[in-house]
Structures are given as C-alpha cells and as structure tokens.
Image (cartoon, rainbow, N blue to C red; front, side, top):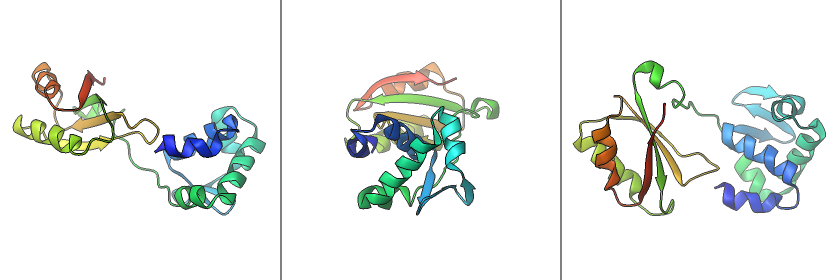
Length: 164
C-alpha cells in the first residue's frame, strides 16, 4: 500500500516520513487533528517521536487534507494490536516469511493450510502496511525446525525466518 501512497509525497521526503509513520501505527486524521483511536495527539507529539519539527507534521496534515485520495485513507485508519513483540512471552511462535510476489493470490491460504496440516493454530497474521512482501505469522505454539522445513515448499514463499 505504501508504494501507491508514496508517490503523493515524492517531492516532500520529510512529509513522506511522517505519513508513513501515521500509516504504520494507525494515526487517523480528522480535518487538521490527529487521533490514535479516540485519543487526540498533537502535531508536536508526532514530531518529537520522529525527531522532526512540528511544522513538518502540520504540512503533512495539510497535504493529506488537500488530497481527496489521501484524506479518504488517512481519515479511516485505526490502530491494531500487534502481537509480534510479546508473542515469545506468551509461549507463542512468530515466523517472518518473505514472499516472492506480494500480489499473488492464495499465499496466506496455502501457508494456513500447511500449518493446519501440522496441527498449528494461527493466532494472528501481520503484513506491514509499508512492506507487503513480508508476512508475520503468530502461532499458538513455538516454531520448530520441522515447521520451517514444511513451509519451505509452499508456493510464493521466498525465505522463512524465526522471529525471536
């Protein structure tokens, strides 16, 4: 998705960085205000988080508001719970799968089927909004070498890494 939106910020790399961050964590824009779910956040807070000047955030908000396509997207963003970093603490597994072609239909289905055949339940899948050739799969059980070997034969799977 970021590939398509990045073009709108091609002449303003600092604004692109702000917009990418908003997309990654789900900061929604309503008019000229920013929200993390129902919590209003200031332009200064976003700027501080990224080491930018708050005027860059304000300019990004203005750019988004002026562009119907961008505003339709950024006005509907929602934060989501990402289980990747805490999965290990829960005794779950996380696999990071790099895909050959992120647009190939059925890849998630093939991965899910293969894991199901190995009696492994999927708790969550995560595809970063800014890098859709990567798929994270969080499972109810720790991942063994057999699981990784089993997934290597799935069509469109380029590489598999264990996320720890």
